[in-house]
Length: 205
Image 1 (cartoon, rainbow, N blue to C red):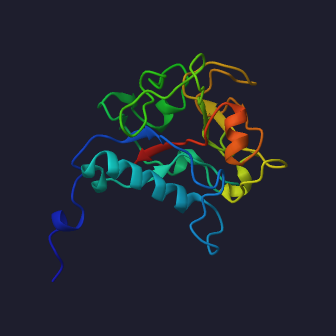
Image 2 (cartoon, rainbow, N blue to C red):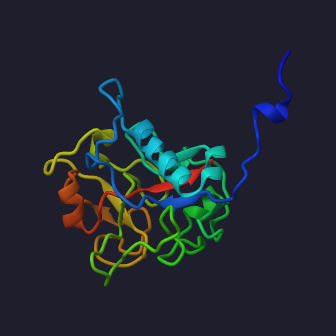
């Protein structure tokens, strides 16, 4: 006999559904879990889930996804429908459309917190780590640069598009939270030299 629906799909027990990772991945822009992974998305998703649960055990009731694009996958298509709330239960966006409307979303340095609810350093802070890797265009589609589908940690010859969570700084689109400029490379050191640490956005579906 099938179990009652409520036992199969328990509703989320927290509205916490958005954060910036407090650290980058251990291998720069390579998030593959093993050699069988053809891209790094599943590995990045695992990082999101692990960090979310460590910060708030109730977050285990959510499905967590990294806001990362590959050549075949758009970040905007893998994060659910919204709304999304930070660790302090402040809403940052109501929907996918709202999230990608730069004038309408509520994503700022004050609201784009890490999984522990801490403010992430931005322009003017030491160190400045406002570069948040996405591999995405401003509308959440796949950009041309994404660390070879999040499989590369090379210091040169490959890059990733990144945004500024504080909505300021340099680059072609300095106020963009998800597509300000490309990093200098895909190694951990290259991310630091670009103004980041390899952090990325995590959303719960």
